[in-house]
Image (cartoon, rainbow, N blue to C red):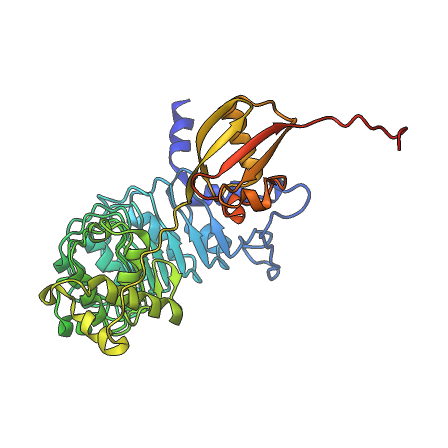
Length: 435
């Protein structure tokens, strides 16, 4: 019994694919995406199953590679391989798998316990074909990361999230092919660590730093242009940025077109509209802000808001961008202060011998007024009529019945001191026999 338990614990890559893609498991035909290819007579792989090009084996308890010849026979056409949430803790086992998947360009090793594992540079050569590599929550060392990037000349995307990195160990060899680095949910705070990515990955076009609490953008124009000449998108959501100077410095990135900066301390005092307007006005080259495309109308409106926001501030407190925008639009007149809150008026409501002073919201309808008065005066649920009496004009026009339930009260020009008269409905004594 213990022996079978150990075997189950040490499941191999080969065992898992044999179980998952065995033709006996598909009594009604081949599984989805499974391909059986013909082989020459006498071929040792005759009758074997060739797996789909996208192979997902996550959370299968895999610890070891298994027979290499079987891996080569089964995985000749595999292009993408997902081994996340397994139990592989030895890079030798990973290399045994990767070296026998000749067309592999995407590899996901997330959630495998690799924190104490060492990858020798000579072993890393088998990753040469990989273009996208996912190492989320593996706690791989920077030495391992460098061994991989130095041996993947076509690597385009690298994911290093949730690895508890506090600092970045810089490699002496750059990886010029890398375009996307996602390193969210780590513990990077100092910009001195972030700038190392520019030195190691000179072609970087997208940098995702969300949830790292980076405290500032601490480089000069010349340094940022040199370090990140190709960066088009940066995600600083939930970072520690607290000064407008940090936002202004992002303009030094020569190709920056997309920015995410939600959840930063700098923006907490502002309303949602103020946040977007003040950011847009400070970032003239950004075309996508916090996931939303920026139109020319959006930009102009934001820049005008920016001018009005700072025009009453002392000159020494105005951002440099203020003078640029005043040169563009001129001095703007303050916007009129318009009160858009629902208007109210006080009227006398008469119901029999009772007179009640009632505050009416003029935006409500006649039907809503009836509900209000029923609750206030305990009126019957039906059988009453409402009349509006304009005290100044009542001698000329008399009472006007409020009988259109969906009509707004403000359309009757009701004013303070006017009157609402409630009278019971009188049932008609006529019937169809009398007509």
